[in-house]
Length: 314
Figure (cartoon, rainbow, N blue to C red):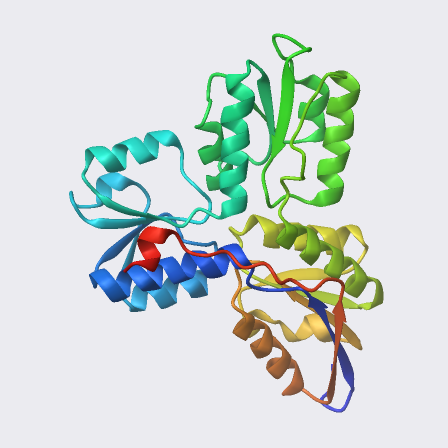
């Protein structure tokens, strides 16, 4: 792209931080303000390298497991949730715990316990190794099976086809998950599920906004970290729409060759990415030549999640 070419930047809306992410970050900030450094955080509080680096600079210490936390210290559980086993270990170590689990993830945990308690085999649609999935499976490990793909949906077996239910990870692709659930419903007509979808409003809205933007774009840039599931789904969605798409941590990752011959760039950000990173991308594009910014809004998000009472009292 030459410096004199005019480029239209289509901003998908909603984009960037969701209410659950904002709540989780606020919990760590309040803990730091009250308890001082160090405040330990199990796993990344949210899956974004910029957020983690910022909190580290303010005294947060990120650990993989609780055996890295001194007895009696303050620890925050990440937005992705933890299993009952992790909570029991925190009690054993005498840790002061602040739980930043997203309320929508906590809803899935509650459903997992309820379905397992009524005797169902619970099919969890999600990705192996993701912290949210691991935490949910931990609620009833003897009664839950992980379904990762259409192939899994076609082959999974349950002890009693009349007693089976499903749940989903909150950050999945809406269209792909619908295909998996269609197969499961055909195979298990008695399949029961939650009264409202487990895929969270933020993932759903960001995917819908990206579809609108991708239709008009020559190139799509998705801001976020590689370990963010909802961000990866946005990249995949743009590519399924036939558009070149790249996942970038920030503006520094943009390669000039991506922009050759491009006149319309779609830009969005995963739910764990700070809004300032999107601003940085627009400014980087503007530095190359004339830019017109147009926002494509498909939904207005007004949801707010309050922090737990123990945190509010800090």
